Figure 1 (spheres, rainbow, N blue to C red):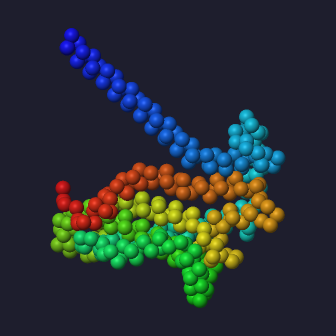
Figure 2: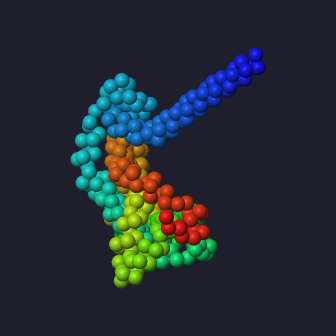
Figure 3: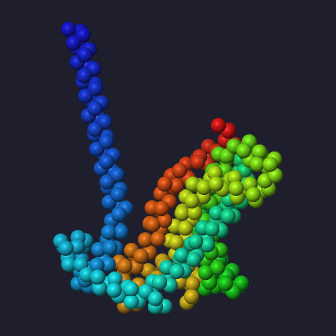
Length: 305
C-alpha cells in the first residue's frame, strides 16, 4: 500500500510537471506570436496603404482582395516622382551617403580607440560618462548648439554636417562594443605578432580586425540603422540640399493635409534598406554583440583559452 502511494505520488508529480511545461511553452509561444504581430503590423499597414485606392485611405481595411481591391497606381505615381527634387529618391540617396559614411567613421575611430584603451583593466569613469553624454541629454539640447556651430563654419545644409552629428551619436556605441570585443583577444597572440615585427596599424588590420569581424559587422549595422533613422539633426540642418529619407516622409504633411498617395510607398522604401542590412547581418548580430557583456569584461582582459 505504501509503495503504491509513493508510486502514485511520483506519477502525479510527473504529470503536473509535464502540464506545467506545456502551459509555459504555450504562453511563451503566444507571447512570441504577439510580439511578432506587434513588430510586423506597421510594415503590413504601410504595404496595405500603398496599394489602396483613395476612397479606402481612411478606413481600417488591411486585407487586400478580401476587404478592398488593391491597385498599383500609388506605386506608379511614386516611380514617376522618384527623381523629382521633392521626391523620395533624393532623400534615400542622402540617407545612404550619410549612414554609410557614419558607419565607416564610427567603426574606424571606435576600433582604433578600443585598441588604444585595451591595455587598461577598466575604462575610466570620466571617459564612460563623456561617451554617454550624447545619449543621456535630450537630442534637442545638442541639436540647437550643433545647428549654430554648423552655421558659423558654413556647413549648414550639407551632408558633411550630418555625418559629423551622426558620428558623434554612434561613436560611443561603436567604442563600447568594440572595446568589449577586443578584451576577448588573448594577449599572447598580439604579443607574438608584435615580436614578429607587426606594427600597430598592421596589428589592427591583420590580427584584431579579422578576429572581431562579427562585432565589427554588428556594430556597423547598428550605427547604420541609427544614422538612417535620425530625424532631429537632419531637420535642424536642412534647407534645400541635404535631404534625408525621414525628412522626405515628414514632408508629406503639408498645409493641405497628408499626401496619402505616397505615405505607404514612402514607408516601404525607407524601411527596405535597414531591413535588408539586418537580414544580411543577422548571423553576426547576436554573435558580434555576445563577445562579452561590458560590465563583466571591463574588469580585465580575458584569459587565453
